[in-house]
Each structure stands twice: as C-alpha cells, then as structure tokens.
Amino acid sequence: MGAPGATQFYRLPSIRQFIQLLEDDVLDRRSILALFPDGVDVRALWEQLRGLLVRRDFLLEEVDVGDIPPDRMLLAAMGEALRLTLPAGQSHWSLERLYQEAREQSQVVTLVSIERLSADRQAQWLQLLTQWANFSQREADAGRDIVSLIVCVSATALLDRLPTSDLMLSVRWWWQLPSHLEMRLLCQSGSAAYHHTSPPSLWREFILASLAGDDLGVVQGLWEEDIILDEATALKRLRVMATARGWCLQDVTQVESVLFQALPDDWVKDTAPPPALRNAWARGLLSSCPEYGIELHVAALALAGRTEALSQRLWRGQAQYLLPLIDQVRLRLCVYLTQEYKTGWATRWALPLSEEERAAVRKSSLSCEWGYLEYLIRTYVHLRRERRWLTLIVQCRAVRNQIAHYSPISYDAFLALWAELKRAANELPR
Image (cartoon, rainbow, N blue to C red):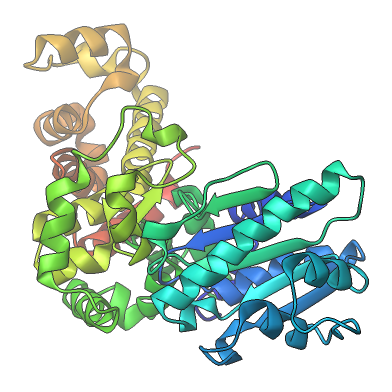
C-alpha cells in the first residue's frame, strides 16, 4: 500500500471533529471564515464538508471568485455567478436585494479560489462576508430564513484584515490538528499491506509520525523505504521540500527568535495560533499538536541545518516504541530466571553496586536492571546456561542507554535489535 492520501487524512478523528464544527455552524445558520496554513488541501476539506451538507439536504451554491475580473463589482459578480435576475426597475444589486434573491434558491453559498486574488481583492470579499453576516443577523431577528456564506481559505494574505467571530459569523482556525497519535495511526494504516509489525513499517509508523508533525505532505514525501530508512536521504528530501515551499534561512531564524517568547501560559487551550506566530503558521512554518505543542516544521529545521533538533524528533519517535518494548523484554527475562532459579536469584550470588538498585532487587528480582543482569550471567557459573541471552542483553542495554541519554539509534541498530527480540519472543515465556 502506498502513502496515505487526503481521504484518509480527513477521516482522522480530530479533523472530522473540526469539519463537524463547521457543519454545526451552518446548522446554526452562521456564516463561516475557515483559515488554513499553506500545505493544507483546503479544497479537499471543503469537499468533506460539502458532502455532510448535501446529506442534510442543504441547497448549495458555489461561486468561483478567482474567475471574476478584478474590476467587477462584487455584488454584481455574485448575482451573475448565482444566475440571479436583477428585478425590474433595479439598475444594480444591493446587498439586501441579492440576499433576498439568493434565498429563493440556496441556503449555503461558498466562495472558492479566493487565495488566487490580490490582497486588496481578498480584503473586499472579507468585507462582504462581514456585511453578509451582519445582514443575516437582521434577517434572523425578523424571523426570516438565513443564507450562510462560507469562505475556506489559506490565511497567508489575510492576517492583517481578519474579521472577528460574531453571533452570525464563525471564524475557525486550523490549529493543533491532527494529533501526533492520529498521525501514527495514519502511518500505520498506510503500512497494512506490509504488515504493520514488520521493521520498516514500525520504523515508519513511529519515526515518520514524529518527524511529520501535523503535515500530510511530509508523510507522503518521506514514505518510501529508501528515503525514510536512510537519514541522509530524508534530510535531503526535507530541504528540497522547504525550498519548494518558498522558505529560506532568514524565515527560520525569525520564527525561532519569537517562538517561545510568543507562547501564552494557556496556549494549549487556544483555538487559534498565538498572534505573534500567525504569519509563520500561515506560511506552514509551524507544526502544532496537543502532545508536542508548537514546533518549527521539520523541513525548516532541515533547511537551517538544525541537526540537534532533528535528532530530538528522531529520538522521541524511537523512545515511544523502544523503551517500553525493551523493558517488557527485561521483565520477561527476569520472570524466566525466577521460574528457573526461584525467588531471590538476583541477590543469591552478588548485589548491585548502586544502593538504590540493591534495595530494589532485594524487594523483587523483577527489578534487576540490564547491567547487573549482564554481570550476573557473565560472572557466575550457576547461570552459565543463560549465556545464550548475552547478545540480547548487550543489545538491549546499549539501545536503552543510548535512548535514555536522548540519542537516537540508526536503522541498522534497530534491525540488529529486532532480530534478537524476535528470537526472544519465540523462546522466553510470556
């Protein structure tokens, strides 16, 4: 199976919840301004929302504002796009007349392709959106039917002229979507054909999800095994990605200079990016999720040569998977030794050097750590039969210690460990 696509991405729970919020806004007869960073397929998301509204039998109309000449009056252009007829005796459209005529044939009107327009022209359409919402309030107060106006758009050129949410206007931000756990699920779903417990699939699931943040484009760009399994190739692909998005080193340094200073104490609860970071967010330079918070996009790190930060992204993906797995193997080995040599084997011939570990193994042999375990099996003849586990013990200890000191391992080291873990899984009791 190939890399996951937009359909799978927009089915992730938090994204479906976001789309549900937009649907709820329409059900409440509100107009909507939904704002997205560069890199999000806005059209694909709108199609998801459109499908929900169609199933609820809403009458929908779509106006492609990108095809409207820049000198055309907005109301006249909307009337023409909606195939409305100007009433007799009227020389031009007013907002009131356009609204009333549109209500006869539609309940929802969507403006698309607004990102293709100049900044000034975009501002004109946003002003119309605000006026439309205000007029909707007047119509609602009079007990008349409402027509919702929807704009789903990349926020890059709009940040200095945004309206605010009001009773009849909902401003929604694509923020902290999706979660890291969901990105792992996405990577796992794409690996089904390879069996998601194979080494390449597990590496992809944990490492790629940690690198990608909230960006589907990174998942797709690094998906192939010859890329994600080779760190140098992955970094090269990320730098190409950053250049293709129009980023430069100055962009990265500017964002870094304000990233942490810009965070309010309660940013986790926010439904929009912090104001000082909105320009960086709109350009796609930031990644955000509930688990890791606000971070620089991984391709921006690669472009700027931030190798330590990139290593930390690799490390955290590995730590999630390997530390619990290695400790599970340690426990199984200790259980096996307890079955073979009875309770108290860990203190029968020696004691650990550390007072803390000494107290732990006196309390339970299951607390025996890798280093002391290796020492016992290497040193004491009573345990010579268990020296078959030394390769496993040495590799688990080395990997555990490396990750415990915040240093990622290579894919080759993972493969070597995996071979020993597989042997242990077949021979150790569960």
